[in-house]
Image 1: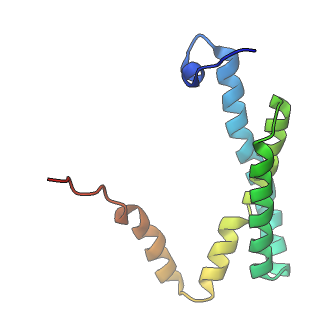
Image 2 (image 1 turned 180 degrees about the vertical axis):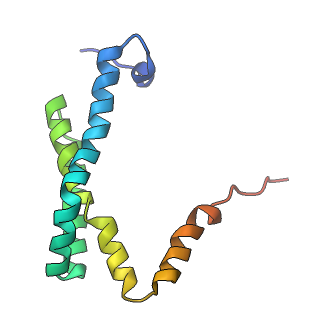
Length: 124
């Protein structure tokens, strides 16, 4: 049994582990890009409340399955499918918000979000 420290991914001499970590991170975005357009097409055909609920259930199930992984190839497969599932969430949320808000209100809401997050004042 090998004990791996959490900082071993940051070791520049451990190139094999670093490239594996980078692939595990980036394969998520490959699945996201491949499934975003089909997910948007499916969103127009399905009821958004059921569609987003289904996405959240599958998303949670995939994350729970990720806790039981034993192999690197399993991690890559689950990260790819997690990207596929997550591809429909943000467009679905924007679609539901567009039912209640105008375009300029949604734009102001998303533009203002990073500004609203401020560090707390120092305690004296």
